[in-house]
Length: 167
Image (tube, rainbow, N blue to C red):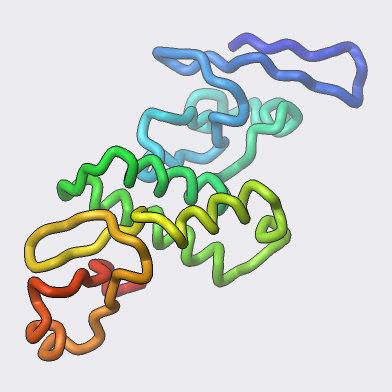
C-alpha cells in the first residue's frame, strides 16, 4: 500500500492504494465488497486489510457506494450497450440499491453532482427495457411497468416493459 499523508493532523492526502493488479485512489475504493455492482472497476478493502478500517476512513474511503456511485454505474452499463443475462442482473442490482436509497432520502439529493446525474438518467436512454424477447436501453418515459400479464400480452412486441417486477 502506498499513500502520502501530510504532517498536519488536519489534512490527509491519499495518492493510491495497492490492490492487485493495479493502483486505485480512495475515491475508487469501498471498505465493503461492492463487486456485484462494480466488478473489478473498484477496490474493496475490508477483505485485504481488515485491521486498517480507521486508517482508510481517515483517507476518505467510504464504507459503501452511494446513490451517485449507482447512478454512474447505470450510465456506464448503458453506454456499453450490452444486454446479456449478466448485464441484466447487474442493472437489476443497481436499480434495486438506487431505489432503496431514493426511498431513504438524504442530504445527498442536494449535491450538485447527484442532481446532474439524475437529470441525465431521467432524460436519456439509460434504463433497461424488454420488448418481446429483445432487451435494450430506453428512456424511462418509454417504459411501461407490467402490472397485468394479460394486458401486457396484448401489447407484446409493441411496447417496452420494465423488466424488474420487484421494483
